[in-house]
Length: 117
Image (tube, rainbow, N blue to C red):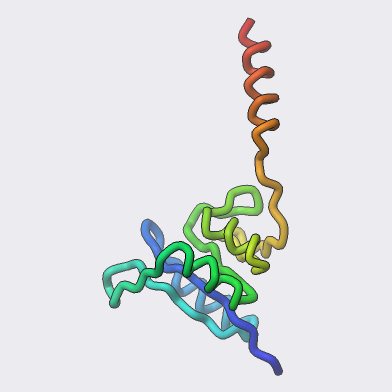
């Protein structure tokens, strides 16, 4: 069986390392962790290097205690752009995400403006 790889960035405020490990065990994924919590040695990488690193993984585990199919972190969005499947806190695996465009914001602004008259 081919083992594919997942990347998880361990951050505050909610540490979801156990969930990341469980997901990888259940799905036969090799897990790589970027640790940004001080109970273990902290490892960080420059942003440009992170973008290149994402391309080496099949999954990005966007587990931060608030992600859904409608709400991704910045790193989750970058992972999608790099071709990763993204696991969110609700257990869904996201492969596509519609970004809010500037035109969407302009339309919303005018709707709010008109409704306030």
